[in-house]
Amino acid sequence: MKIYAVLGDPIGHSMSPVMHNAAFEALGRGMSDRYHAFNVRLPDLRDAIRGAKALGFGGLNLTIPLKEEALKYVDPDPIAARIGAVNTIDFTGGIRGYNTDGIGALRALKDAGVAVADQTIMIIGAGGAARAIAFQFAYSGGKVIIANRTVDRAEKLARDVGLGLFELKKTPSIKSIGLGEVKSEIADTDILINATSVGMHPNIDAMPVSPDLLRPELVVFDIVYNPRCTKLLSEARKRGAITIDGVQMLVHQGAEAFFIWTGREPPVDVMREAVIRALQ
Ligand code: NAP
Image (tube, rainbow, N blue to C red; front, side, top):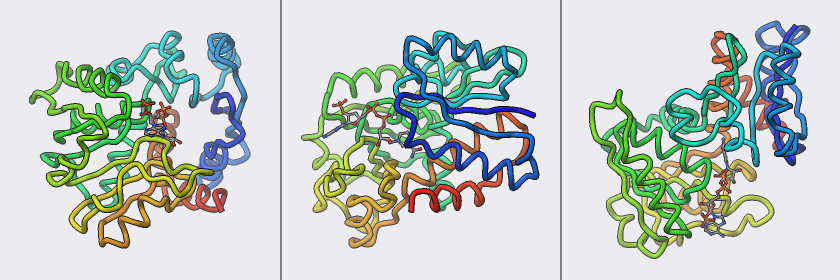
């Protein structure tokens, strides 16, 4: 029997228990493997991670506000180290830290038939999720533009990504702008990503960019998943754009964690259905 868990503060909103328990059940492991949510305060994180290891947990996920602090207590993979945040811990052979948010976003686009290589991708936001997506997409050959309300934060992210990784064959393409420059840059953008919390419940009428800037040739991806159809996505659909919602990323980042822990192919469709049911 293995226990898995998500740690965060607060944690009541997390979709991860529903998603992972559905996956264990679908693979016939529902009686032996269970996934729980624990409220862990930042000062207790080190003890919580070591305690989970000592108790023989299979693995952990981390959410707000623990992802950055967790980096201190794990052996991170190179991308998680550069992002500066960990959302998945695996205890096989040590305490290994990963960040699956970027790969989750990439697979959400892939499912919709959208490739990122050589595409111009504008990411609104420079917080934790935006960082993971920016690294993943720039390292996958996308031309990334970071637009953030706090410009210093966008500049720092662009600098960090621009340092590259030794495995990369090409220098990553990334630049930063303020929200005031979105209007002039969006005409050349292929993929627009909202990686801010703008539009999230309860402020469901808010949008990160003006609807006038949306056009049919854009792919619009909103990582907010509550509500599933944000105002940004509904305005983009009205204008004929391809849209991708945050549930797709949520499921794929969870599926990657599931694979890291179990080595088994995750039942992605079952996980998606469980999340959609829980959100309803
Ligand atoms: P975070 O680290 O707190 O970053 C928040 C970002 O939103 C910052 O760039 C912030 O800009 C920007 N922002 C907040 N309010 C704004 C406003 N009124 N106008 C303009 N920009 C604003 O949060 P996070 O962890 O990156 O999460 C961001 C969102 O993504 C949340 O809604 C979260 O639920 C969602 N998310 C989804 C998934 C998924 O799997 N689908 C995964 C992770 C996160 P400043 O820098 O200027 O403050």
